[in-house]
Image 1 (cartoon, rainbow, N blue to C red):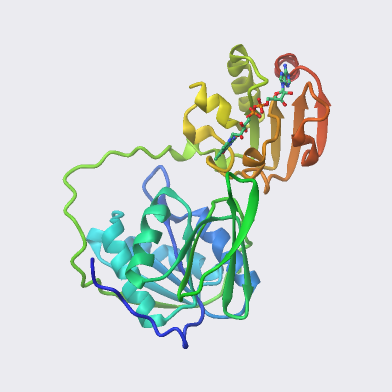
Image 2: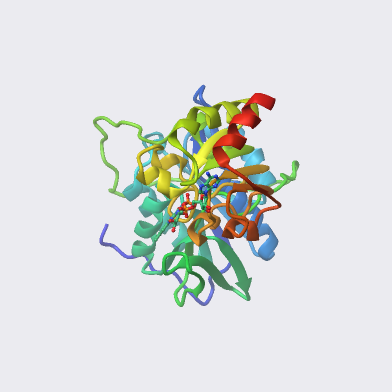
Length: 332
Ligand SMILES: Cc1cc2nc3c(=O)[nH]c(=O)nc-3n(C[C@H](O)[C@H](O)[C@H](O)COP(=O)(O)OP(=O)(O)OC[C@H]3O[C@@H](n4cnc5c(N)ncnc54)[C@H](O)[C@@H]3O)c2cc1C
């Protein structure tokens, strides 16, 4: 892992995206939404080449047409059965080797638990910089302008990397899901991993939330903040269930131990993009708002008509969150 891979910066061009593979409950591999979101943004930014990298084996073949439909032109598949399972050191080594071969100007991946492990390792191997957890990407010539919250979310910093490849991880839910373009074609290159970085995994235990417990996938979110009483939690669950959605919360309720961290929305939680975000007793701190920038419609219920969430809400209901939740539950 100490070997450094050097890239010819004067020739560097195009974008390489690590395409994260998830599994449906029946074990079928599928492309993670965040990878599609990144590909959609890359397609909007410029016309340079788009490379994808996946790790796996024969079971990934049915995904090729979908991957091409999101704009990947050349897909590198690290074809190794042992690498179906995520191994950050080995993945980073293979990614760095592929990057040296294709010389991309930028490498992007989702700021997911795996992406957060993989990106810094890859950046270290390539001796380049990494902007983590971006909430905005722009391109000027070959240069990537990477925006992310800084100083506790009180300002948004736009960062430029002085070394190539420029690397960034992107928060899930930051960019909208693009529409696929079926029929687009591309090339698949099987890559033989010849490094030494993999490990024999004796046992593993999943601590990642199940897909049906993922607030990022919910179309309706009933969000609770410090203005809500604990007795309203079952009522909120009932409202969310009736609306076909899920309950999420501000950081204060995670700190109180009412919800697990996987339900927290915001800068240090999850970024969500539901069709409807119903915020009960949430003041609208910058850190919380950072997680709902892509919500399509925001309704705030708050006793304070001046609460900051009003700046982004489409509708403001001034009233008691617990009483309105109860009434809503009855009506539904
Ligand atoms: C580095 C850092 C990262 C952070 N990351 C996050 C993050 O990811 N997510 C996050 O949420 N926070 C985050 N925070 C915390 C953040 O600064 C706020 O403290 C938090 O968002 C406030 O949560 P809240 O709106 O629930 O509570 P409060 O700010 O206390 O607001 C409660 C609201 O409820 C209203 N209210 C009171 N009673 C009622 C009632 N009966 N009915 C209706 N409304 C009522 C009040 O008017 C008020 O607007 C972070 C902070 C830091 C420093």
